[in-house]
Image (cartoon, rainbow, N blue to C red; front, side, top):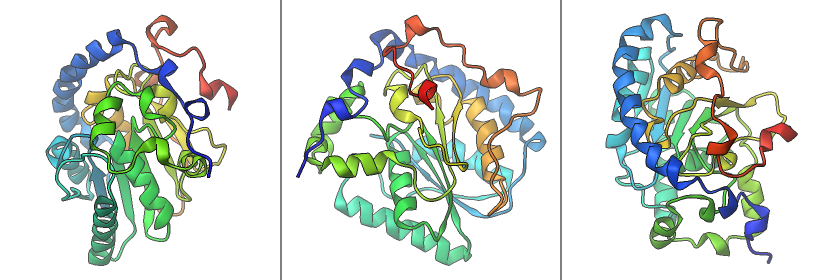
Length: 276
């Protein structure tokens, strides 16, 4: 069976620079900016009370997603944590626990569920939606490296230490499969200023109508507080079931989503979106 090779994935040549990694400290400004956003949420699309499950990133727990879940709940959704402790990387027990959590919430509310995942949590969300498309309404990922080799991340050595399944031992067919979007509406929120994972690994290349990328800027560690993420997430979650439409911010919001990162700041000259 063919094994994964770096040449087949977004690899170490796209790993964020040390400058971008150091600039992750700007996440504190994203967190501060979330406070005034809470007062503006009444001007954003409101929810229909369907359940939303939020997955934390690598080495994080549900505490990291608490502000985001409160925001989602205030919009009018039933926002829930994953209840699986710290995200220490993939394991078979974790996989079963996540499936059970999704099924539990769907059974409780008798409604399809939306899955929101931060970083590695978004990779999980995509795979759960792939396995359970009949009960998942949509997926939104935030800086999730579903197209990347661990070497494209600045935390790859730590990931390798904790993951139960060695990434290099996964068959190439599975990794290619993982890079394809699940069969539900899927939105990838990404930032070219990501200092943790290669941004090229966090974007969709599918030409499916219900698959999209939204550039939100900012730091990887600040994605759960980023005002642009909050605006985009409010819009995406409010899409009526079965009537999904691509994200189109109103005129007054469009400047928020401008991609202003200079090329010299971003490692990896190839822009995968230019080929789509």
